[in-house]
Image (cartoon, rainbow, N blue to C red; front, side, top):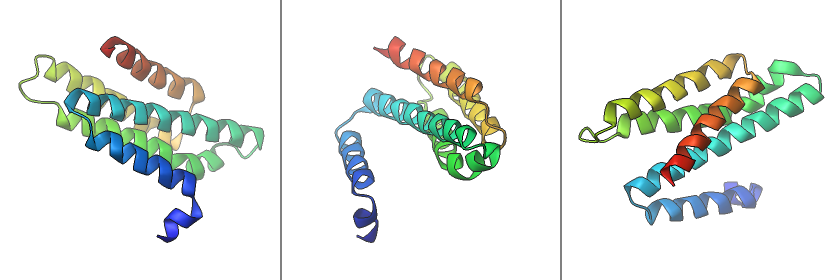
Length: 131
């Protein structure tokens, strides 16, 4: 309960996300995961921009930006592992999600805003193609 008192906005977002997950089916769950990964990468970009403005460079990103990058990477790894074996595009989806997860992992130690934005663009393109 203490966590709810410290950041009510985050608690509200978490409850809203959990409600969406509970009410979703397979395709919707994939969309939710991709949207969450996209949001986490956006958070990482904000932290990186702020750290550059504060002239603290990569050290600030490494500490504050690390959690959103790890979150995005974890989501994509989960998606890669959860592709149904019988899915006609299963191998391609596993390779795509796994590749994005690896690219995000490379950003954890040496973040590059341009590269993170490219990854976000790939995820955005997938979401648009899915409708």
